[in-house]
Image (cartoon, rainbow, N blue to C red):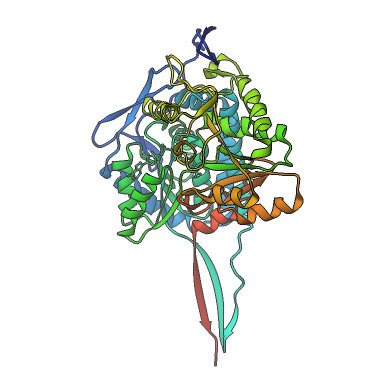
Length: 500
Ligand code: NAD
């Protein structure tokens, strides 16, 4: 092992290669159960953000490739949509088993492609397996509104149907898990899929395709790799796609919704976030600081729900910030292979690294107080120091736009009303947390916050049984829970006249 010293943090790097070759998937598109070459023969390099080395390359898909995948999905959906919930649940449980049996391959691929520490990659795979298992069970318990006699001599039956073919576009921060959050409920509801993983992180989705090939019905799951502006665009406009689901940035969500409007396609958007963490004066400040250490820096802060914007009561701000800085100072940075105690990996790519650096430079230029961290670390690898910026004034740019890196800001408030107003003063509405021991505040404040998830004395705790999704600029539609199954189904009313 070698260590690169920086101002406050060191990156532990693995000097000895693991010796085992990465379990790379085939590089073609996965269409109708087999890997096929792309129509244009163009490739996109896939980069390891810890070493900056090219791992492999994948097909840069075209509209033609999407069209071939959609044809396969349309054909397969007819049979798949007619299966029973039990038959679909059997397939989802099989996928869960396949992922579990190949856990090591998924973890090592995901870490190589994203720089994720081992603990984060392991957690992603565990949650992926649980997502498939939950949706397998949930699909068997699905009901629709009870039918009844609402007109004389007429009986109504309410049917829940699949929507048809769903186009899915996923981001780079949790490539396998975000794919699972879509694939599991979409298949469970009887739809077929064409999925486009992020061009930066396609490997785990292709690996999933490789491992399920021949073991699940052909054509229900198709993968087309490539860029948003070609493959994503075609998925959004294709007339045979009934719904397009995207997890990604606001700009991409707007582009998808605009294109989808032309064919009046349904849209499901999980977009960015800037989660406020509201700390009241009676809160357990140590627990709140430990909570931000975990939820603000998990996956190096590249998380749409990251606890990145603290609003703390002015009477306890100094004490809270001291606790937080102490907590953050113990974070361990390094490459995934450097040990299972590594907590912070690199940013996903050079452009993203540059964007985070720019945000830090802006904060310094604005004279903000960097309480810890604040610098990029010399390469190789796109590492940024875990950073806390304190005494941030209301409305500061760094506290209102999504940085998507290991950067937490601390602002103060003086009254409960001000805390709520300031927390809600955000274009995003994905998630927030409230820290207090007061039982009245713990119910009253979440009701006043304009966010799809509000935790009390916790942050970033997720479960498959409960919905995930945002308000305002964070999009609409729900992942996880029975609400996702609703989103990927359509309701049909059949009314039978049985009068004489
Ligand atoms: P991104 O928007 O750059 O890319 C996401 C996906 O959209 C990629 O597959 C990309 O190729 C595709 N895309 C880009 N432009 C497109 C277009 N014009 N048409 C169709 N598809 C297009 O986002 P990213 O950088 O990969 O991920 C980070 C963003 O995702 C952050 O804003 C983060 O908050 C958000 N995110 C949200 C959630 C959530 O659950 N709400 C979860 C994870 C990430």
